[in-house]
Image (cartoon, rainbow, N blue to C red; front, side, top):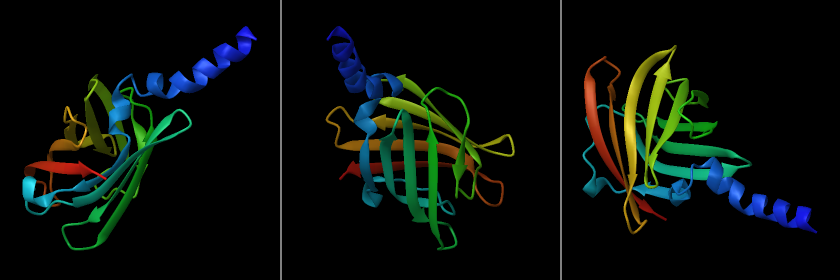
Length: 154
């Protein structure tokens, strides 16, 4: 009987531990609020971002539009442990890592062929209704760009 109780507790709390405790506030679908965002010219506009769990991994799915107007869809699956995991479909990178800063903030680093192409921070509002993503990276021409994207929870 004790073994069942322990297993039930693990099933409930394991996702929270995997996300680093408190990062579950990021789980859900987020839509870009362009009127509150300051997007750099010439960068990909991520219209929808979905954070969800798949077993003990976090899955981040992004849909948007590239600087040349083409649809963009990329998916990252991994742990929030600061280690690189592959990302598929991202025109700017082939690896990405996420690291917990505090219960409402995570940082990410995107790389292509081992070279950092973008860094950023995702900060969740206290009320859980919005998140702000600040990024520093390089555009298609190699120029440094900074953006702030605000997303509303759906």
